[in-house]
Length: 150
Image (cartoon, rainbow, N blue to C red):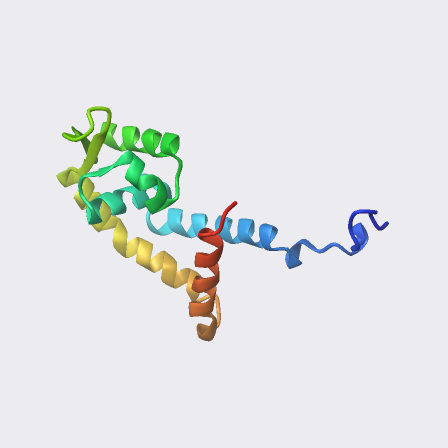
C-alpha cells in the first residue's frame, strides 16, 4: 500500500536503506565495543567530559555544552557523579559567583589516561570494519551530521 504522503510503499520500505536506523545500529555496535574494551565504569559521555577538562582545566559547565555537545542539565548530572567518584572537583569561579570551574583530580587523570588506549582500540576496531579508503570520508560525514542542527 502506498501512503498519500509518501511515494514509497510500506511493503517496499527497507530499514537497511535509512540513515536513522543504520546510525542507531552503528551506535549499538560502538557502545558494545566500548563496554568490552573500556568497561562500564567510565561511560562514553563521562569520558568526553573528563577529556575536555583534562585538555582545558578550569572549564565551566556552560563552556562544555558546545564543546562536547551536551545540554547543561546532562553535564551537571555527569559532573556530579564524577565528583562523587572522586574524579572531578569543582572550584568557585572568581569572576562569576554562580559558576564553578571544573578540574580533574589525580584519580580522574589516571582514569582517563588508563581509558585512552581502550578508546583508541575501539576506534580502530570500528574503522577496520570499513575498507580503508572509506575511513576519512566516513569520519568527515559523521562530523557533518554531528555538527548539524537537530
